[in-house]
Length: 145
Image (cartoon, one colour):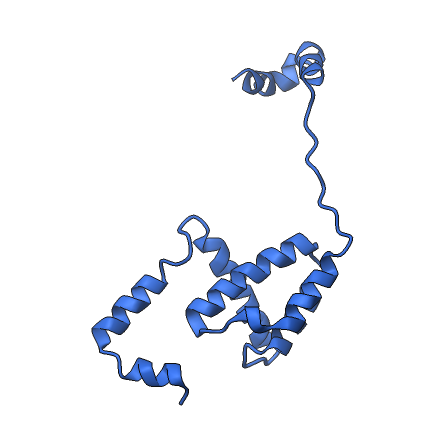
C-alpha cells in the first residue's frame, strides 16, 4: 500500500466525499466534455492494447500512434487534457515523464502553425458588390451585422 492509499484509508468518509466532489470541479465546466472524451479515447486505446498501467511507455506508445494522425499542436492539447485527468483521477504526474515530453518537443520541431487568412476591407466590399444576392444574400446581411 503506498502512502497516498494509506492516508486515504485513514481519512474520514465525509472528507473523502468532499475531496472527491472538489476534484471533479478542477476541470473547467466549458471544457469538461472535451477532456472526458479525450480521456475516454485514451482509456479505450489502453483496453484495446492490454495496457493496464499509466506508465511512461504506455503513454509514449499512445502518443506515437496519435502522431501519425495529428499535428504537434493537437498532440500538446491531448497531452494537457490527459495530464489533468490522470492527475485528478489517478494521482499520476506526467511532468515526470521526460521521454514523453522529449517526444512531443521533437515532433514540434520545425512545425509552423497555419495562420488564418482574413479578408481585407476591399475584398469584403468587392464580395458585397459583386456576389449574386440569390446565393449570398444571407452572408452579405451577416457581414453588415
